[in-house]
Image 1 (spheres, one colour):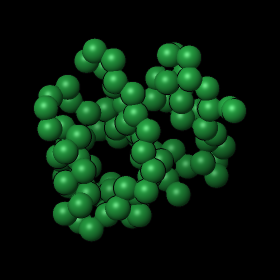
Image 2 (cartoon, rainbow, N blue to C red):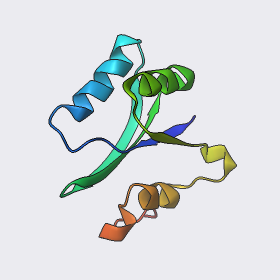
Image 3 (tube, rainbow, N blue to C red):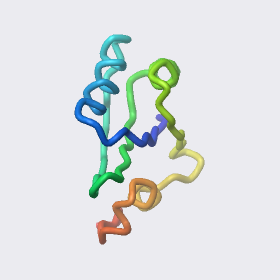
Image 4 (cartoon, helix red, strand yellow):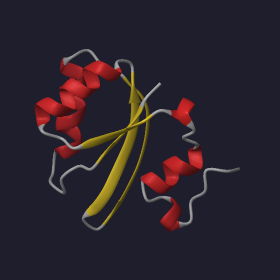
Length: 93
């Protein structure tokens, strides 16, 4: 499972365009976490098709990073990557 981190434009419909691009390719979003504050924000998600997700994001010209949890990415890493840790949210329970 690959986690993708994307920075969406601060414009109405940016999230919908991203989701529609995945849906048009038959790709399901299997997990999602995000944070937005003012004009900054990040979204992390996993999908049913990592290769198709890359193509969809590239087709939109959407900058993204990939994280492989098997290479050591933890929930704490995800909260830091999305900026949640800066807002006091911890990945530990």
